[in-house]
Figure 1 (tube, rainbow, N blue to C red):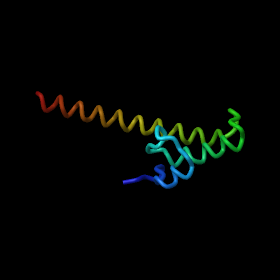
Figure 2: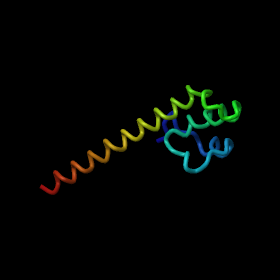
Figure 3: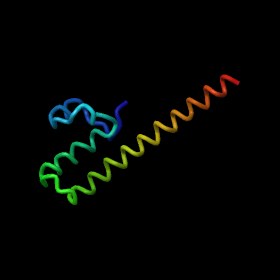
Figure 4: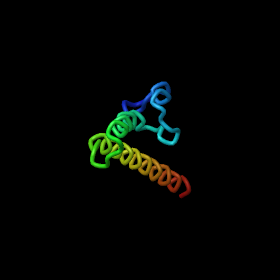
Amino acid sequence: MPSSTTASQEELKANRVPLQWRDGCSALVIPLNICRRKTLYMPWECDHERHAYEKCQYDDYLRRMKEAARIKAAAAEEDS
């Protein structure tokens, strides 16, 4: 089930988002890339968009690590 941070395949294709960025935070990378192109990739511009994208990536990382720990604990419980 797609979340509010996941863009549709049509949106991703229309905005020419590379395959490696088409993840759970893909809806946040579209406005970030638009802002970057508009401001000629100035590092001090687009801070809000960049931080929102990075926070989404970090939250996704935490979710995956908690899921991996849960699976590992369940496997250890099953073995004993």
